[in-house]
Image (tube, rainbow, N blue to C red):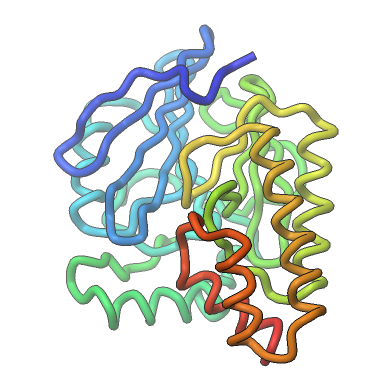
Length: 264
């Protein structure tokens, strides 16, 4: 059983790398330290690397390119973060058709436009060109077996050999974007599935690696969110009630978006 705190830390020019050693495989979890606190994952086996997601700020793109210089990278799985095409430009890019669409014209594009407006040239708004389209189910890249699960926006990635799964967001002590009660139920079902599968680590692009206790904590939070929303008349009272219940949670901007969804 891998402990989420059992890693070696390496400082990069921007951010920090946390390396988890599974024996035949290693997981390099890159905390970018960028304004969105993004996380990028590198799975390493027999000298080959596969990246999950891309850094999107020029400083973290440069730092991770430097970290990978001279190493063999078989591919990048571009799921929810399609910007940052300065990252490994010559390496094959993999995505499901819906993930590519999400970045080109969907909600992903809207976010990229928004971040470009806010952060300017420090944000690499160029879009990764997808060279390989992934389907639901198994994919072997660089000798590493992945299982692709399509989601509403993009896709999640299971890494069976290290008993881990990658999804966009979890965050056991921070707010997340919940697009109404139906979406809360879908996330609860997904997290219950993770608990049933008994994953050691849950990886997300907005948080350090988490475990099944964190998934259970998030389920309670989502149930509570639904109950609070049902008892409130408007977004402002909902937000105040949630903040009172979870005073130490970060991600207030996400809570604002959730309030907008529940009380549009």
